[in-house]
Length: 322
Image (tube, rainbow, N blue to C red; front, side, top):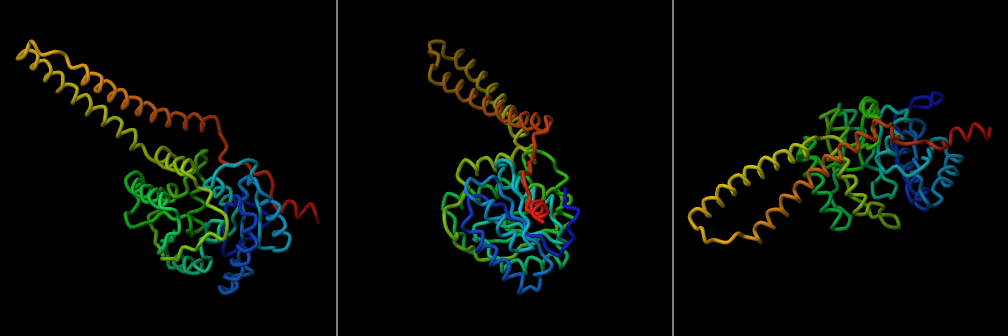
């Protein structure tokens, strides 16, 4: 899906864009300044992926692309989510190395040089680790929980923090885009492909303006992608829970029978009976819902639910204008 008319370059920077129209000019300026320091001004491209942002982000991207030849813009037909937007960008990169970063200027562009150095030393992927998280407390707790779950579901190394600011070699990106499922989780795909991963420490900057786009609902959706798209452990846990409850039920039945034999006058326990029924019913409902989540994702993939749909690109528009 890459644009055949574009020649390859040393570096591709992929930035999913959502509600960041006012931040984009500053982001482009800072990235270009850092590329100048790295002597890469003629050897890099910046892909801005408009994820159907409700503001005028696409108009800003088109305007910036008309002024700067290193900018390539892609606009998706609807909002597919951050990770799917990244997949759209990875399908169009031309660089030998790829950097993924957010659009809110919380990721310092000056760290790109250090990430490239790590890749040039032979690592496949370089993550960043924040020395001073500037997210809300609930997001930090959610991030810690997400990393704990990823360690157990995906086999993530315990010391690795899954930051959205990372770099990878072109070979890894080419392997990642082979995944064509509708629910992409980039970190899960990376861990499926390689364990040659390193990290660098960075300072987490304050958001330039506005508020973050990840609320509790979006964070929960991302967690479900990780849990049900790249691991069968939740299904195994449901199976183990079923075995444990069956064993406990058998023990309870034997206990109740002996109690009745030894104490015939003992009345039946209404409260304990209802509590047991509600507990087992809740577990069964949870397990059925978990199975349904897997079946639903399988159904959508079999029906070719798109991972992303490109509505427009700036380089096609530039050709038309010429």
